[in-house]
Image (cartoon, rainbow, N blue to C red):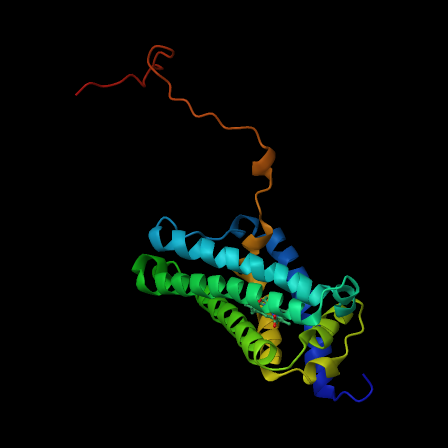
Length: 243
Ligand code: HEM
């Protein structure tokens, strides 16, 4: 970190830790003071046709991208080389699977934004916070795709020797800002927009990511049964009225 400028340290060391703090404390605050607002604020009741296409497409895409990031950022290059996975094969796999997931994610997001903008009832249920979140989310995804296409697929930047090393060192409290200031522009923009997304995350509907209803897997069935007249006489005052 010796030769890094103050600006580089502020942007690629201080800012990410500030964002991490906002992310953690923001979620704790939201959970403490707005537990009932911890929801997707679903708009399915207003429109369900486009939602049933856009939402799964977006979510399957983003889940694929999440696992792509876990592998691309979390697993050092030396490990994949040690198990005999050649660089060209890794690269081909990452770009093809990554871009397929990105296509689903972008396609889904476009459908969701189109639906939100064109359906007046859905638009009416959209807050300024939602609009900001959509903008930052779209920027993060857009810059990620641009970085992959321009610098990884068509260019010669090996993010596993730059961005990924910076990312892992962040978690051991020794990030090297030079690795990020030397990264190509779309990678820098991708990570800056991701940081903005993480900073607003706890205050948006994105909190639903941490609300997986795992209890549904183990809870007993709920049996719905209508009461028929043979098994239950109407209670006094609730007798049927024949018109
Ligand atoms: C600090 C956090 C993040 C880092 C360090 C990071 C890093 C990267 C890197 C290195 C790539 C290039 C992969 C390649 O060339 O094969 C990439 C691509 C991408 N990222 Fe991120 N990313 C971050 C957060 C996010 C977030 C929060 C989102 C979405 C909400 C996202 C969405 C994408 C997309 C859509 C792509 C392109 C598709 C792909 O190849 O998988 N990233 N990111």
